[in-house]
Length: 278
Length: 105
Image 1 (cartoon, helix red, strand yellow):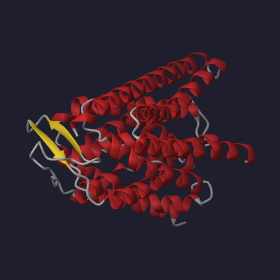
Image 2 (spheres, each protein chain N blue to C red):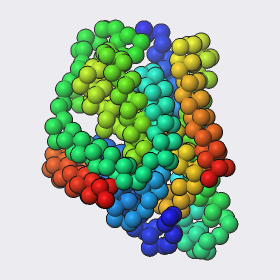
Image 3 (cartoon, chains in turn cyan, yellow):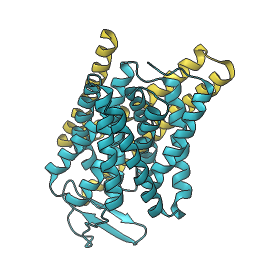
Image 4 (cartoon, helix red, strand yellow):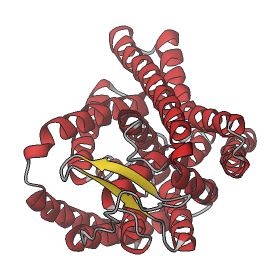
């Protein structure tokens, strides 16, 4: 059953978009991980309708964030385009799979991913994988960018490419199955195992997510699971929220926010399992 | 190594322009569509604006991939021209799947 559009429902979803967009910007996440459970568990939308709306907001966030970053060399375009082959393929398969599996299975999978995200958020290692000699050769897939804070040119090489490709495929698959961006799966792996500095990994992942989410969102759209009016207010809300989060969030203490949101995600996880277990 | 810098910068610039144009156009369509439907209720114009906004948003990453293919081809970087073409085909496959779902169900 598709939700019926009313002005008050549109206002609620716009507000939810603002909140998940700003939380996403503050935490370096897409925000879909908050929007999907809100639409599915609180408002009672079918899981696929919630995922479809969330994926549209993910495309908008990825596009506007990457447009702002283009030209700063923080996005590793070559690595991004290579890994997109894997994320888009995974996302295509996920979008099709989502049409044939029961909502309860998607909810349990979301519960699992939410718990993993919470754990990653609490334990995230800030490892740096940086070659400080600016003359070093980054190779075809490596990169080089200027870091404002440390006033240095950061150079890195990509290690264990097959791991990066595998992680990207899984991230793409989960993305369109669950309506999230999938950055939370890729970024820690690219950073911890593939030698990519956190900021470059996050920027490259955010860049890829637009294409990834599109491969899934198009399928939901064709299937008639995307309500344009509700997607519109969600997109506008998330855009406003992430703009505000990035503009005013620099001063905020992210540590407590992370702990609080990890707690929220654990609760989401339990609720998804409770709902999906019936 | 230093030889490919200008190329990658040109590509970054082009990609930035495409993404910004797509997001701006779709946000404007969506915002006007939402306001229009709030003022006039469910109307044909509002529906068209909302649909257009969603379609432009869905097309934005696709356009970004197409621009990248063009840039890699003009640079004769066949490896990356091939990789980005594969991504384009995957997006096309999604669109085909969407059309099939739409017809059958």
